[in-house]
Length: 132
Image 1 (cartoon, rainbow, N blue to C red):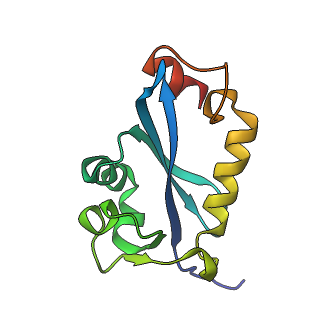
Image 2 (image 1 turned 45 degrees about the vertical axis):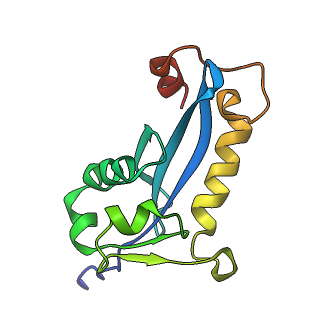
């Protein structure tokens, strides 16, 4: 029996715009996906501030916070929230955020509350989070 191969933990993180009740009440869905398993590790709904990015980081399981490399876009909140040892900001041309971008598109297609121009929207934040 061979020992189980250790894999490198890699996470892609991105944020997606949505709203509750009216478009003035912006909510951002922050997502982190494990590259190898394609599983959503954690999500957070909040604004687009550094505090929300920190909340997402703190919600990650300890193993990911200690060992994973996190690929993000160049949004200003990421360097504030993620330790430089764990964070890599990359452009779309690198394709290192393609899984999370694809998941965001799939989520928008399947959850009517997240479509940008829609009649299906939540009037309460709790309902919005439940729809996701």
